[in-house]
Image (cartoon, rainbow, N blue to C red; front, side, top):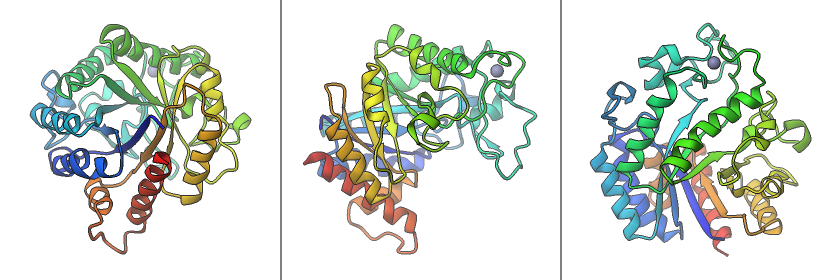
Length: 325
Ligand SMILES: [Zn+2]
């Protein structure tokens, strides 16, 4: 498999030592050749300082990470989560804290049991110019030739007065096309994103996290085919039909697993069986503290009570090993 990757989070300055070990030591030892770092607000943006979380990493940190990664044969990709995931439950990230006017559903009951994450409005006239400045800073600091725009699990869409009445597939596609216009057409870099909103939950059998139940799936026909789709699936299933679907639509697909052994094994089996020229490899996701992940991958002691971390570390090791075979 061509791309053997790891996706990790980042909490700013405090995560930099672990990230350096990941791209300079731990990742290469596992045969990893791509690392996606989910930066979001944890970067000291000069163009919009208000969009940065406290104690962010700096451009200098990013340049050093890039150099270490390059010296060890790793392509390092910064990620900025767009559209959805602008809060964790009722706690907005830096962007919506500073710019509440971008909130797609400011009147939503964020204290409700089933409330997940806030979204920004893809039709707000000021959102893209601001976000493109952030993209540019990340691309320049990381000297990156790709950027991951996230866009998974967008549950709040089509609710504000600007968006209401437009089909969700068109709203979602507009956002994708806007980011593509800046990243691919203007900056000439690769655009990566999660694939779940392009999948029809009913037709594929995936649940509401891994596929769309809010009618965004039609967007798959409305966006450019040169986007790399990170096709994440974490549940145990016999089939993962999206690996075929994305390739049939003309996209490059990068299947991504997480923390369940049986799911990872089957996902990679299906990826190999369905592999055409547009099947890129395997991407291990982590969704937990990067320090713990790096310690665990290095074989160092991790909290034995932390089941989540243990399973993630085991999952990354398994997935990368199978992908290398
Ligand atoms: Zn809107």
